[in-house]
Image (cartoon, rainbow, N blue to C red):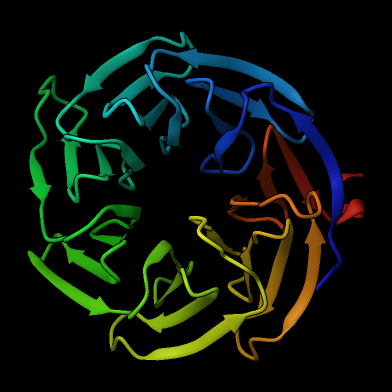
Length: 300
């Protein structure tokens, strides 16, 4: 695997970045700020394209729709907002959850927004209709929802209650797995066969999605009391995580050996990361800045 270097450092001026997210094709990214704003960037050119303001508290997560025409965001103000990318205006504001909303995703067709909250619920909103109430609320978790991943017919949720829950929408069933430690983030591999869980005991665990078998454990980073995120590279060959120490670790998926370490800012936690969907680029967020990492030759 090619060594990555810092291609760009962007000072976001948003107090602290709570999440950084590539859009669906990796051309743009969103930064979610403690300053209650979302910023849309072209991270490859260091261009700020638009700022979205309307939440009453810090923004914890955001996602772009499949055609990049809309953004959905969630906040500590207990609300989910659907935005028009071009005008910057809020199209819908959903307030069904009783506590801070920690994570939000679109489904594959971007007809639904799915949000997870500290109130232990996952809410599904039909954004095509004008309905303010969720079409469904999943109440199986016994503690805060920390992350959501969505495919065309499945929803994977992770929770502080040490369980993952995989909902099959088509079959109307749920598979739950007890992991033994608080789970801070979950990711599905691109081939849809495995899921990757960041756990509070400073491990990342790889599970077979169908059998629930533990395939591998990755160690070396420090999670502390942080809600660390993980990512997988575009080839499903490496697992990536930030660390309390400011390092970003790359592990080989098969051997679980550390193949490289990047340093965003030494001894300052790198919590949020986002990998480009089809290319070898990585975004990392630390305090008030994001860095774009890649192979120097790729940008020429």
